[in-house]
Image: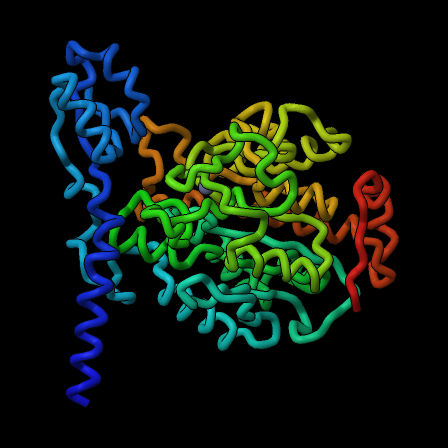
Amino acid sequence: MKNILIVLSFICFILGPIDAQHSTDREIIRIDKNQENREELLELNLDLLMEKEGNIYIVASPNDLIALDAKNIPYDIESHKFYPREQGVFTIQSGANGDFHSYTELERDLMALADAYPDVAQVIDIGDSLEQRNIYALRISDNVGLQENEASVIFLGCHHAREWISVEVPYLLGKYLVENYGTDAEVKRLVDNCDIWIVPLVNPDGLEYSIHFYRYWRKNMRNNEDGTYGVDLNRNYGYKWGWDNLGSSPNSASEVYRGTGPFTEPEIQAVRDLFGQKNFQALVSYHNYSQVILYPWGFTEEASDKEDILFEIGDKMSQLMKSVNGRYYAAERAGAGFYLTNGDTTDWSFGEHGIPSYTIELPPDSRITGEFFNAESDILPIFNENLPAALYLIDWCIQTYPSQSHTSQSHTRQQQGKSLRIRYPVT
Ligand SMILES: [Zn+2]
């Protein structure tokens, strides 16, 4: 026993400094926005975090600090204000991220939902992360253990570690559906007629790292073997992967590093493989921030030949969202309206599988109002305003799906959705 403890201590000693490398790598610094070297500051191309109360906050690498010193630009290091707790203790269960879920909190809550509502909810492990955490799907349907001839839809969360709210919205959607199944006729109709898959946490390793070491961590925890860590999971999908260096980066240090090839990362292999077993009719991938609804293409500014229907569904979701709290999420084509991305989830699910696919960038709407941060008190309002859009998309799948078990009322919508490739379940 004693020997085991010595070995464990040694492993912790070895691992400690390696992990610390990620977190001490960069600092969050504050610079007076109106200081006299403003022009020179802009030329440094720094990673702007936010502007607040006359200050600019920047995520600065050691080289950035050297460059600032060389130009005599004064700054204050304020990283400590941005970490939710002291660094260096890699405990999994701590509540360090408040009402937002950690990996084990999510695991616990998903299991509890499935235990409480076994007739309509199942937790399925769809694959493992690099650090061997489970990637969980909450599957919701009537006769949930069976493969039925019915519509199917998938909601994904947290490809990007620091986007904590993107775990909460899909998780709460699942919770809402199972808890209201017995009492709400509309929820019952949706759940009875659709196989709903919710994967709230695609990047569990990154999330844990973001909670415990570095709040702004974005990528997964891939050791790139060159001193850098992480592949951007939302640039590693196989459709038009690496199309250009604008929509992703071949540089391993980049926040949008696409990896050494398509689908190299196990976290998104799990998503890909799920598509091999299920024929989804639509996909939503939640991110933040920006408060927009993005649809393909992302790899080009050009429109797809399904532009009309993609916009129509996106715009309908936008209207439904606005009706809740008055917050406007513009529906935009990703590459033209937002910025270019290649190897992202929605280009792949649309390009490869032909289904309407949306990246919903949750609030806030800008860097100035908080960037990746949402207060705990924001979780429910953001979920509430996203709920009717999610329910609408589930219904769209049901109405569009040409199942014999559905009544003739589905036929009109079937016609509208006809321009999209409709796929049948394997069994
Ligand atoms: Zn994101």
